Image (cartoon, rainbow, N blue to C red; front, side):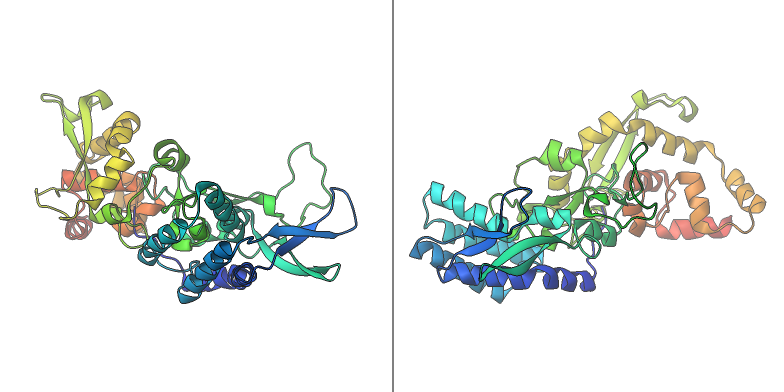
Length: 387
């Protein structure tokens, strides 16, 4: 829900891990040379080589040559989303040269070259000479760079679309109960790195050359990524861009209540939640409609009303039923407590909007507290001093 930031060192590492081999393979295909990988039957100790990728016609060779030229002009791996959108237009032009069957083969080849699945597994290419032929093979780099490391460095614990489900990057390298493994401190394997999914903002089934582009990868929960979005197109021009802007700058969650209900008797059946562009004073937060479009795309209003009204009730109760005198009493009883800790004790979140990605339903909580009159930053400062 907050703008995502990629560390520059990780952009460099990503490029260093994959870029040289991508250029090399595109170069071979553009010249009509076959690309080989290490083959051999399963269980055989003897390494062999076999054709991996090839460009059979002059048209295909020209296609890969054009892709290589575009790649050298602006590295797809580290290009920001706006540049990737322009690349889509270039690929659309290139695709028109091929019938559907041939285009499917070309896209499958690009998936092999810009291999998101291998990045997810923590794999990179290396070259090896087999029978005097230069071959490529995938080797593990899980300890140094993979989709797992990428999610971890983004420091986003919650789904970047809904802010309601956990995003995780876990290293589970302890022996499983009942499974004997040599050594209690064994070295982590690539299968020990467990992580959430990454959503391709620009679908990589249509544009497989953008499958490894970091600014095209958004940490998302299964509900948003698979169940709600699926294969639907998320248009850059009409929606929020997670690496360029924050959802929090575009809309607010608000509650409304049935008439005649007292706060102490409030239940989830007594309230509803809406997504609004207006702040607590009725002023427009952001004139752009991209925020509302994205909220509707991911059905946030429906999801929150069906799944999270009871948590909204808890927030409203805490604010309305814990008097200010009680809050002051907390500070007196815990004189060494810090502001963030006290906020978390009271509301379950840090009341700094820059920390929304760190807390489940952090945006909903702060939006409701704002509506109740608690959390403009000036108001937070005033309350804290008063306590």
